[in-house]
Each structure stands twice: as structure tokens, then as C-alpha cells.
Amino acid sequence: MKIELKHKIQNDKYTEYVYDNFDIQDRSETTTEVIFSLGEAKNFDWNIGVIYGSSGSGKTTILKQMGELSKSTFDSSKSLISNFDFLEPKEATRLLSSMGLSSVPTWLRSFNLLSNGEQFRADIAYKVAKAKDNDVILIDEFTSVVDRDVAKSMSFAIQKYLRRNNKRMVLASCHYDIMEWLTPDWVCSPQKNEGLLERGQCLRQSRPKIELQVSRVESSTWDLFKKHHYLTENANKSCKFLLFTWNKKPVGMVAMINQPRKGCPNGFAISRVVVLPDFQGLGLGVKICEFSAAIFKDIGGKIYIKTVHPALGAYFNSSENWRGTSMNGKIRHKSSKKSDSSAKNRLERASYCHEYIGESIEGYSELLKPIKEMRNNNKLKLEL
Image 1 (cartoon, rainbow, N blue to C red):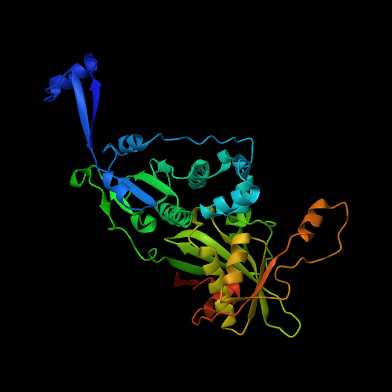
Image 2: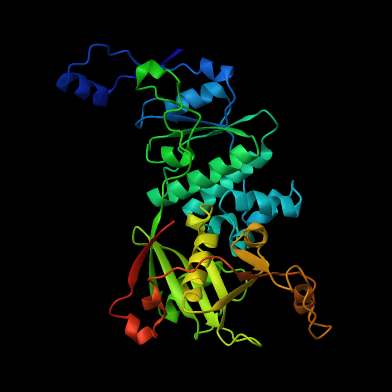
């Protein structure tokens, strides 16, 4: 298909200046051609298509030929999650988590207080939720306003959701670095092969590997992460804080606390775990939990975790690396004042309680030394 975009020139002193200084033949009209062919997409099942090319190549024009580019309208007087009031609350939390917005405090913030990356994910989540069965969701300028590592994280989370739920989406982007993370079923570029649809060239068995750097840090570093934790922002300063970075950007933190138990003097607990919102959706939360548990197991520790976060809890329940304790899924009954409604609500919510039973990891004992000894030599690498 060929689309001609025409513009009638209204001549004035500015256009005359251009004519006088450049060799312009047609002074009455400009024409731009966009050539593409997506007909083959009707002949196979797909979930993700990508239209890519440089700025001005016609990507948006092609999207508009496929349908209307809908706009999301968020009411900033409400919490983000309250804007999804056409869904049941549990369904809304699952959708946001699947889009890589699994930070509970983020759900309670208004749309205008979110970062660019969070707003973009929320916008896509809204369009996905509003789409009817068999609709093709159209997204323009995909990842154009976010950091490139954030773009990769976002791409991986979105493609995972679309395939699990058999949704269809076409994305327009000028960035090719997201292809390995999106693993599209087809791609089309109006600048290549006369806009013919291409299949299979970007497919992978899994996402590219991510190399994180892990450092032992002081408790003050928790300030970067505390507002994203669903419990109190406070963290016990006696914890050992492990910071995880990707390409020199902080992405996650785990706080381990010594927690001796009866018959277990070398017990530890994962007191806090946070992955920053921009990097959620890659499965990093469970990986940094397991890495942290594994290095403590190497020094003879027994490691436990308790959480009410549904995504983490579901993973621990199904993982061979974790074993549910006697309190897993049970409600802890403690005395509380009847007038304290928040305490009452906490008592009525069951927790996921697990012990780490996976393998230990050698070679990271440097991270567990007293913090004063860590200041001169505190960086190690791991691959996830």
C-alpha cells in the first residue's frame, strides 16, 4: 500500500527565501510517500507487531491506517489504581503488576506524580484493559520518553503479559534496541524492503542476560528505595544492605537481618526487598532475593522471608528453592486495640512465609563483613 501525504504550500516571504536559496522545483505542493504492506499478518497468529523507522518515516501514518489511536484519560484527583474502576480491585492489581507496575505505593499515587516510565506503563495498562476481545491495541512512540534500560525492562514485561493473555498489540518505535526484549512476531519498516512485513528475525528463546553489580552499602542508601516498599519506610539499621545496579543505575535492594530462632542461632530473614518501578517486570525481585539467601546459606545461615505481596508469594509457593513454613498462608493472631482499625486489617491478612532451601553460592563472603571493612573493596558481579 502506498499513502501520499500532500500539503498545499501557502507562499509568503519565508517560502520565497527558501526558493531563492535552494533548488525547489514544485512551489505549490509538497508530497511525502509512505509505502508498507501488512497483508500477510492476516495469514498467521500473532501477538506483537512492531513498525520501526527513523523520525518522519511514516510510522504514525501506518498506525492510523490500522485504526484509531486512542488516548487514556487519568483523573489525577484519584489514586492510579482507582482509575481502573471498571475492573475488580484484584484484577486491577494483577494487570498493573503484569505491566511491571508492581510497586504497591505506586498504585496509591496519582498519575501526575508518577515518573515518565510509570506513566507510560500505566497508559498501556489502561489501553489493554479497555480493549475488547480481538481488538488490536495501537501504541505510538513506544519507549521514546524513557531511559534505554528502562525501555528494555518495559518491553519484556509487556510482551510477557500480551502472550500470556493472548492480546494483540502493534507498537511504533524509532528504537531498535528493544527488539530482543519484545521478541515481536513480525516487524515492518517503511524504510526497508518497500515496507514488506518480516517475520521471525527477532524471535529469541529468552530475553538477553542481565549482568547486575552487587555492593554492600550503608543503611542510608535505603533512602533511595524506601518510598517504594509497601510496608513502613523504616528499615532496621542493623540489617546488611545489598545494593544491585545495572549499567551503573540502582535497580534493587535487599536488607538481611540476623534473626536467631529456637534451635537456629544462625537464622536470618529478608527484612526488605525492593526493585525500583522502572525495572519491575523482569523478575529481578525473586532473583536478588535468592542470590542474597544463597550467599548467607554459604556461611551456614538459615534464611527466611515473610511477605504479603501476591506476586512474590505466588513465586515462593511454586519454587523448588523455597519451602513453606508452618505459618505459610496463616493469619498471625496478636493482641491489638479494637480501636486500631489498621492493626485489625493487618491481623486479617495471611502472609507468605518461606525458608530458602536452594543451593548456596560461594565467593561473595566479602559482602558479609562489617561495613567498615567493606568501604575499600565492595563491588562484585552476578549474572541473571
